[in-house]
Length: 248
Image (tube, rainbow, N blue to C red; front, top):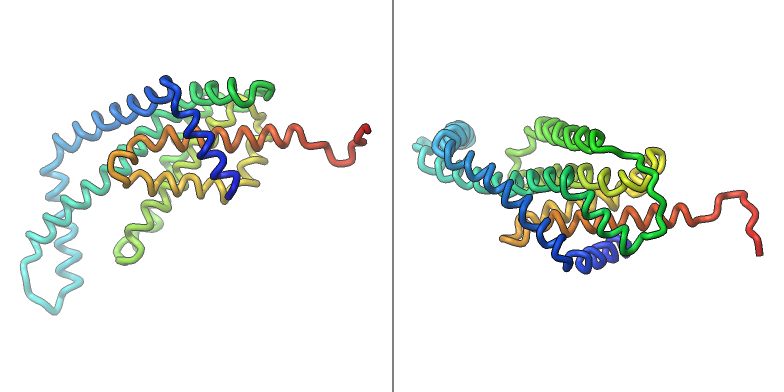
């Protein structure tokens, strides 16, 4: 936990650079433009479709009471669309940042804190694209598998955050190490820090729902992932090899 807190603290300091502040803005603006246009064009159709599903579910759940659930279903549908819009904008901004912005963030952190860390280029641009596609595919699979649980009131607010937590760490961890680590080093670091990386991704998913602040959180947590993973890589390379004689 101390390593996570230290990484977030380093990320705050890195965020003060003008280039990092600009990265906070343009991926979010692009994501807002994309989803804002889609919502503007398809708002009525989407609201009516969700309302139809909700009406069936509400009337089935209250089968012993005869009433018209159309109005309640329509209000609920609009609320669902707004709630879905937040993680969709955040996830889109994260994917844009992961492919186009994270290399600049890695360079910013490495040139200041990890100058001596050798760059062994275990990742690539095509690997970054494939990693993002795999993250989206995993999100769809997790969403479909967990679909029966979404109707359980205590679980439905938690499930999307849990899924997005996995997607966040999946997207950010690859690009954070792609320039410096070998493929073997990346696999070893991901395996040994699986829980901590997921925790960082989960916190990012929660912060996404904080008004205004949530839209700019991907850059902060992207920097936190970079600091966390490069520090781990640096420590591994400096650690003595087991069985190696230590000169006094």
